[in-house]
Amino acid sequence: MPLKREFALQTKASFDAAFKNPDLKYRSGPFLVLAKKNSLGFPRLGLSVKKSDFSLAVDRNKIKRMLKVSFAKLLSDLPGLDFVVLVNKGNLESIKKESLKVFKKAALTSA
Image 1 (tube, one colour):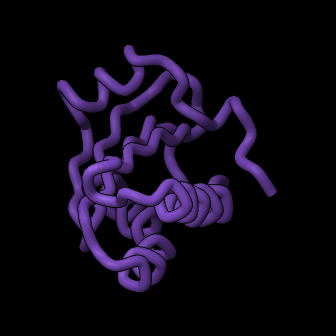
Image 2 (tube, one colour):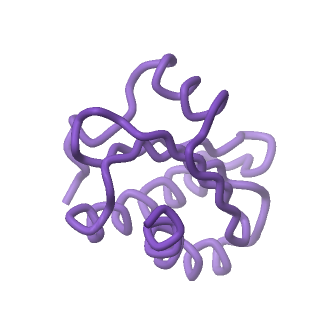
């Protein structure tokens, strides 16, 4: 089940707002989650996986897919925030385990 376009951050301005003045900043393993309140009433997701940390596109896409799936599963439980997730260097197994938990922890932190 792909994530619908309306739940994705698409503009540079949306990313910049979360980077410059986040309402929530949370680190969990290889992830740094920044979030900014939005006026839409539903959460949106933006992802950043550096090519220098994961040289293979297959790995970068797998990480993004895992995060999108875990975000989609918790969509109804998340507050109206624009989430930007930065993925730092790590092995894929630890990233897979942590991706299932990162949005649950971020939602609890924001509450």
